[in-house]
Length: 439
Image 1 (cartoon, rainbow, N blue to C red):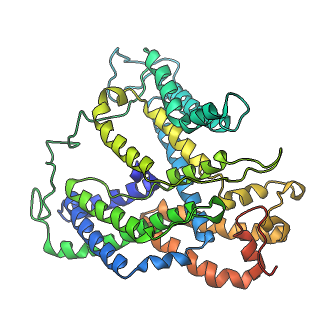
Image 2 (image 1 turned 60 degrees about the horizontal axis):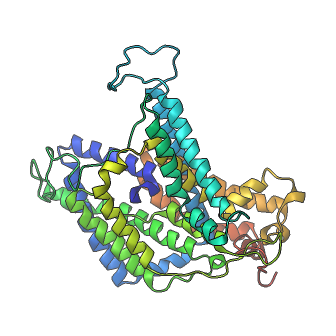
Image 3 (image 1 turned 60 degrees about the vertical axis):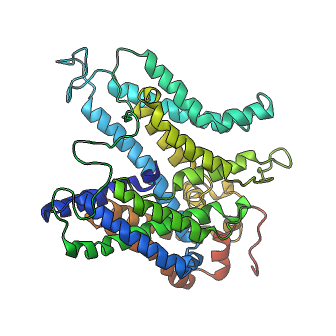
């Protein structure tokens, strides 16, 4: 689940990494171990130098582009996987060679349609339960309970529907039986840094620092930008001295995980944004028709600890988890991608491109900035977003962190030459009721 934050980019990098190692007669999984070692060294140096102060240069301009990109990846990957199901099980009038048991590469009738129904049903049911939290039905505590557990309720209902449909095949979640490696015949638990099947080249042990730097930049940006997004002023959250500690734990644990063939950790950006946006659901409106305002935020670490414990316990839940269709999980990924777009000002301004000015909300970036200049600012972010998507989708995806970093000098040095200071302050305003200084 952690790796889903940049699933498309990560898969692309892994494919090219495996191709490079195979062409040079090296083991890719051993190379990941040395990259993990360099990641630990890099994070120790960065934390010792307190380099997390660099997050001050990651403005809202960069944050919105990054969070929008991650949400788009979730949405795109959802439909990409659904299209794959339709290709493997195309709609036909007559199906040949259909056996009672599923055969590899043999299209199954109704599989694609049922997968679409399960995905859409999970998505819309989760959305409905999310909105039900603010409805007028049932007592407040019951509504909040249903809304807070809307996602697992949706998974349960759609999995139950699939369970009772016996004559249609759907691909299920592949869960190992207990704690075991993916392929015990290929390797053991521990990855030998010197090489499993043959000796790993010494020169590559040192050359691994280059991909390690790229991975570290990506993890650094993803972790710190996620923290900044959650800590936006309108959410009334204040991140204390946790920037260095979070970075140290995530990178160091990811580096050690490479010794066991496990993926590197990363901040769950979409899930975090979705959770942060849900804070507005817990707020109250001061009068009918007014926008809800956050009343209080209860910060604690108990829920995070319990989530981690339950994830570990899920290893023993194979008899239950193996019945969950992948299409249901696609619906949850789509839900997280779509709901994380709410609250991103860039998404709101993109919608304003399709809306007549008389229907525009009374936000500072609307009332204080001319409409065409507001759209011009939005256009610059769309151009950067398209550029990032193109880079992510090509063999040049390794350069994605550097392209993202270029948004910092773009915002600090180029945009002030195009927009006035007051306009830039308005587009980064927290929301209604905020007045930009000296405007």
